[in-house]
Length: 159
Picture 1 (cartoon, rainbow, N blue to C red):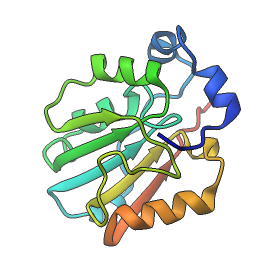
Picture 2: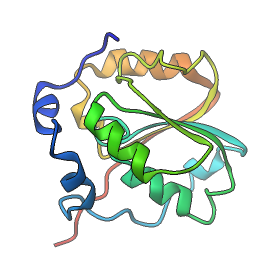
Picture 3: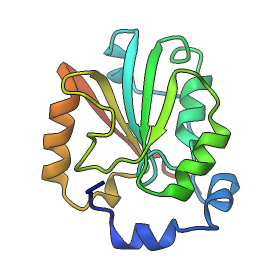
């Protein structure tokens, strides 16, 4: 699988760190989802999600699936993550028949994401890891239906 991963992310999210990442308080909690603009996407939704350096360990996915307005709107959620360790924790912690987790990169979402199939691309806490924003935008355009939404989400901790 070709694709580019930020070198710091490749090293920082390596083997043995993913369970700690998933259970730690290093990330701010997921606040009530999602901005009303995103809610304009009409169900049933086919979502392609990329969370911390991809889908990460499933922190955002679990919040999305548990949210009362979103839990019943999702038809399919294709989570993509370049790190094998993160995918492993995701697969153990996100148990839902609508959700798949596969290897994928910002600039290459070919793993099971056909042209014009996604209603929404969600990137939570991760777009700063993207090594090539232009290549990512081209790839998002390829998989999204016309007039669909790309949501870049950051939760900032209020200290």
